[in-house]
Image 1 (cartoon, rainbow, N blue to C red):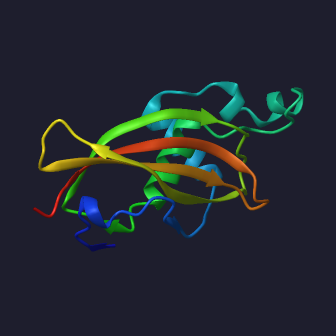
Image 2 (tube, helix red, strand yellow; image 1 turned 45 degrees about the vertical axis):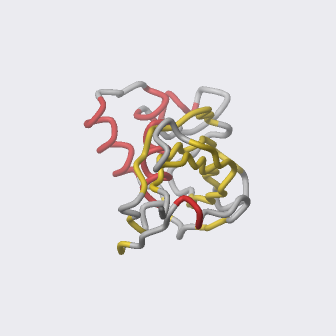
Length: 147
């Protein structure tokens, strides 16, 4: 992780970066359930899940989001501020043993209310080891202009 100043003008539409991968573990499930209080059997009861159509435990969507977005934090841009996330969708389930990585594409740029700033949208896809998109969202940024 390092600091790298990137100003609004330097963001290029369709520019893409890919993160390293991260294998999801049972410990991830347990820790996330403890943090959130979400102990639903879909995440925690292996035997019950065997009786369901999906056949195995499913990762918490919020955990997949947190880990997938965490993977994108390889560089810190002191010129940008996160405004949040839009259009989040959980496309496919993630299971213990799956390895996910994130692919980030600059999908939009625009003007902001403050003239010294611009808006940048990063489209984020979280992808499993089979190349399947498991989650998508748009990360909204407010970014300083050079002038």
